[in-house]
Image (cartoon, rainbow, N blue to C red):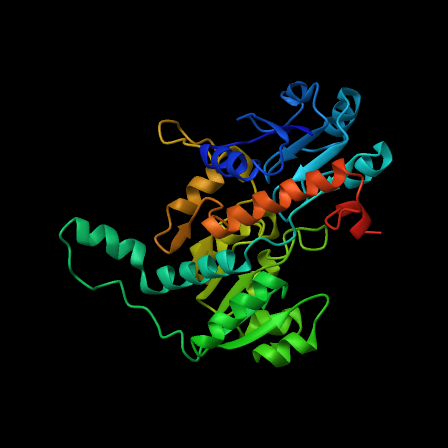
Length: 334
């Protein structure tokens, strides 16, 4: 099958090319994001392969349909950037990678917690400057702290398991709680408000939906403990960035770790080191010494990328052979 692969980096080419030797699809790699400005690149292709910051709006889908594209293959779990109703109306199949490595994201999540708590990012810079003073670097024992996990899918559950290993008390909130998971891993489901009030650390692991957009806003932050640590490795728009800034300024938020950002599409995965970044909110976040931001890096392990590529190619193969695709987004939402 002839596939236009958008938003590609060198590592995408390397992993896809190696894995495609057994699939034998015709992959053509494009560096730009998919958008109305670049959709014409998909002319002559049966499928497009896209990532988290590609735009698959109604307008783009209409253009893809006119170009003869029948499949949108997401090489990620989230599908909030796709207008699913338009895809259904146009008869365009949308597939995704529902799980690739929950360990990758969960381990990065806990890494952010530890780096912020023990101020490793600040200590690293101090030592390189010959400053061995410990003032301002005091952390706290993770053991005995209460961590609130919002979203108990695979990543949330793995994160909970790691934190239980630290000796943390784990609380969880999920629209669809699973008592078996709670019993197995030793955590407790509570209401959203109770989780916010009781947690020393709050970690987000839920998808971006209309119900979760700006779930963490000024009102939610006001219910949290003073000096709370907030971690987000899920989707940027689950947090209101302006509210985060106010929480940091007031001291309500004591530590903030982000691997995602609401307006990341124009920032993340690009080298902007020689440019002036125009996003004032993002730049304001970077001024706080108790904020640590990584550029949508949590998924980025060899195992996870291998799984993403393998499942993406398998999805394309199943579609090409007219087989029932288990990762068809539209059918899973019926």
